[in-house]
Image (cartoon, rainbow, N blue to C red; front, top):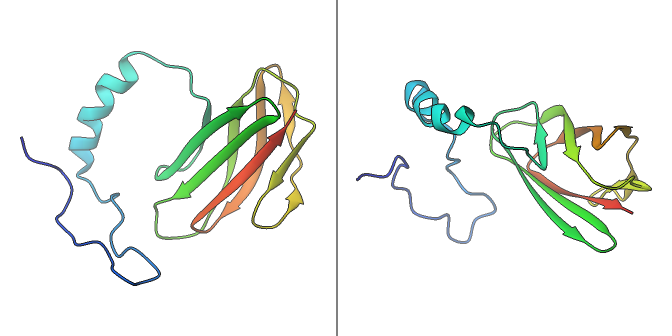
Length: 124
């Protein structure tokens, strides 16, 4: 079995990795997504841009959301979180500012501007 990733050495001593794993063949991507989409699994977090990765870590004080932008360009989108609590505040770690959000049931949404990566704290 062969990897779909291009062989590229890690950028040593630089400020930026020179290759983001996003330029896959569209047909191969659709084939992989057939299995993923066959059963709709609940996502803890999502946004409307392909190529933005979300990682959710829960804690007794709230949740930390890590977003990584692999698209090689800044994006503006809306983040959707599935939370089992009513958040008091959502803060962007890089700007240290509160972000306005909306909550309907267990779904929380808020707008973001993401250049490369950022953390968001969701406080209980």
